[in-house]
Length: 174
Image (tube, rainbow, N blue to C red; front, side, top):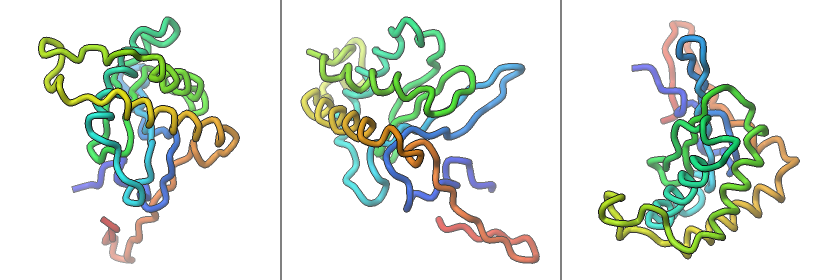
């Protein structure tokens, strides 16, 4: 089987940031998946599951209510590896173009007094939330983004080089 695009990123070198994971063409329109990475894979502890769940609820609600972006948002959700989130937007923009949106999204977590939709009626695991830890992670990511705003590495994926033999055999590092 062919390795999917998100597995071609060198996870030993990726740092927190905002990256274009893939751009898909649907008819005449583009849909872009962004990797919003909060932690260094395999080098930092993963996000606390309950805090990540709270971040998912708060930021999804923020994004889908933002007057300038709500019609562009297709999806906001956690990565299976618990090191970040995926944001899917209509259109095709460079990661730098959504920097301010994400900065505002994570800053909005600090103002949350409760986790939206954290009830048995609205959520599949409503008791698994941690607002205080969500705020801690959000503050940490905001500080990181602000400190690194001019660092182009937070917007560019490190790609893994794939060795190919003369016979066309591929060697993968995973």
